[in-house]
Amino acid sequence: MHTDTERCVRAVRSKDARFDGWFFTAVLTTRIYCRPSCPVVPPKTRNMTFYPSAAACQQAGFRACKRCRPDTSPGSPEWNARADSVARAMRLIRDGVVDREGVPGLAARLGYSARQIERQLLAELGAGPLALARAQRAQTARILIETTELPMAQVAFAAGFSSIRTFNETVREVFALAPGDLRTRAARGPRTTAVPGVIALRLPYRAPLNPSNLFGHLAATAVPGVEEWRDGAYRRTLTLPYGHGVVALTPKPDHIACRLSLTDPRDLTRAISRCRWLLDLDADPVAVDAQLRTDPLLAPLVDGGPGRRVPRTVDGAEFAVRAVLGQQVSTAAARTHAARLVTAHGVPVDDPEGGLTHLFPTPQALADLDPETLALPRTRRTTLTTLVAALAEDRLRLDTDSDWERARAELSALPGFGPWTVESIAMRSLGDPDAFLPTDLGIRRAAERLGLRATPAALTARAADWRPWRAYAVQYLWTVDDHPINHLPA
Image (cartoon, rainbow, N blue to C red; front, side):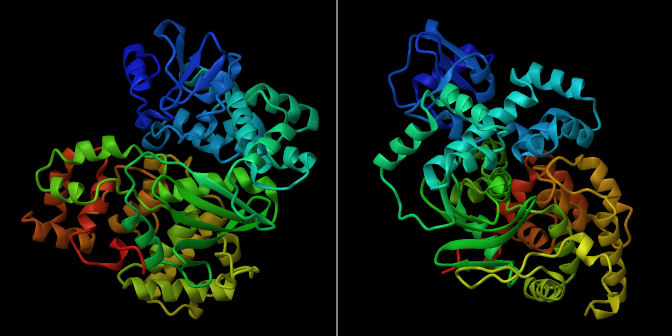
């Protein structure tokens, strides 16, 4: 979008927050870059230039605006709606892969050479993987500086910087303030009561956001010991590269309040990325709802509660296991099966608030699972153990960077994996916005109540007009049924 100057200028002049993250405005006279919704008086058109990413602005020598804080704007929705190499690379960078594995590790995951990835990212984003990762490190450092009392040396290494000197230089260059000045400036503003060991931050999103189905679904399907709904917040444990964590996510009118407790602060980037992915916070609800409203049967559902997101998962392998446990049983039964698995094979953790007890077991932890201990039909035991073996041996990968169609084909080849299970995993583990569940009982009931033919073939044909947002159409169709997944818990 950043190449459409006229459209960008209109967005800046109207301070349209819907375009935050789609592009960034760099002001040639002040050498500052902003998000489109920046509250300051817009500059003259001849002094504006536009970039597709914060990293490209920083690479061109612009520093972040202190008013609108463009480094904290929602991510571009484009990377969640595409499955090409650039989108997959952006999802991996957002997860901190470059910090942990370097550019060669990023390229190896994508199956390309480092030079090819560099060329593709430069062509589309105006910055290579190192510059994009550097911009993310700067943002992580700012969060740690402003929300914790960690010494600056610990902040530097936790944010992914290789040296304190590089950390100091980057923070000064990006924010035009020294790290100490950033902390002092944050201390002068409104502060919430600090809790030792807890990082509190705001997760931005594009309005509207309907929290009912999002948090209602997560709460209704929560696995005891791993997830819970408490005091208006969804809480769960996280398995992270350097340790584990506990997160509490609370819906607010203009942001999601996030409280993180981490055993290692180096996991902050990954934890934030996982939380944003879980809640689908980088979606563009205006574009999605506009497309779905073109169907006269869906339009009343959209108008009744616009801004529905697709509840995803913090771990693709975890959801795949839970999807198998949930085959042909009620939500309550699926939770019971998963809770038994967690108690027997999950790693115990300490939760200061006392409600969470375990991490969900990894495929490696389940590799030696005795199928006879499972209270499941024999065929489903085989399905589960086959899936676990494929995940543990890395023959099957279900993550944000996975190729959607390849993953579908690999899942379909496993015994016991029908269309419902495959598409559920595609929707919630892989994040495919066009995943569709024509065989789902809730979808078929909704179709009957709306006067549609409820056969899978007829539903698939009708859903052709909903593409590429069929996963969001599923969320609206589920609202026809009065199910707990559609309501925020009391």
